[in-house]
Image (cartoon, rainbow, N blue to C red; front, side):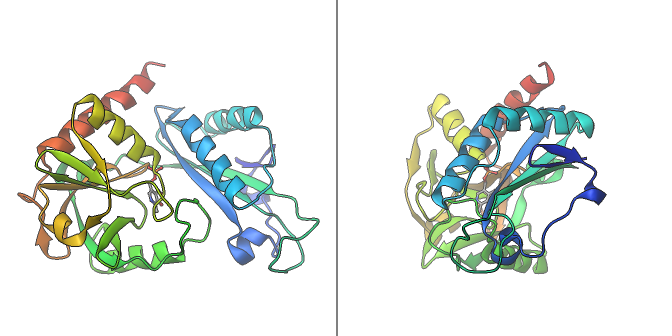
Length: 280
Ligand code: PLP
């Protein structure tokens, strides 16, 4: 089953207009919410961010928040999803093609679930990454459907048998193609400030909180590539990648080439948080 505005319908019966602005312009916003043990992880934070993204592109919010929360829970139940994701998007809807907002367009919300295992191998052994030029627009804080810059970077990483592309603007590391980037140097944690150059990841926010709880100093500042290459530890965070240690950037080995102590500590805190969902 999928969710179409407020209706549950079979995926085969779902119908998208060829002039839907999401389809033609990428004119819409989205979220990916993780489901562990049949429960949404951080649903509130994801829906808050979706609301913010919608507001930033002046997109009409199509359903009530309460109804949406309930529908997401029902969708998970109807699809008997235990571990996986809910993908949720809102487009500006179908209208005759003009760049400016059409008068009569009505937003369309769709959501579906997908089973997904946790990335155990990456979490334990770390990932290889490449560096890629951040060619995206200047509102990366909006989780918009326009993902070509991200797609091209991820494809290049994949082509080079790597898991993620770490993006940079000139010599500054911004974020991953679908993740945030953290650097550990001399026991301190560094990550790009949450401004227009990055998406303020939900996992990023949890990691910052865990670090502060563990009395690890968190410094939100722009980090040059050179500093990342010489870091003791690097890791990426995202809803699907969780806290994945980075052991290589291009051909440069990070630290000792295996998950470091700070990364492992933060992973442990995240693990504890997830396991609480099982007891709900
Ligand atoms: N940055 C980008 C560009 C992303 O696409 C994502 C997630 O898909 C993230 C960061 C991480 O965000 P979150 O932790 O909310 O999944």
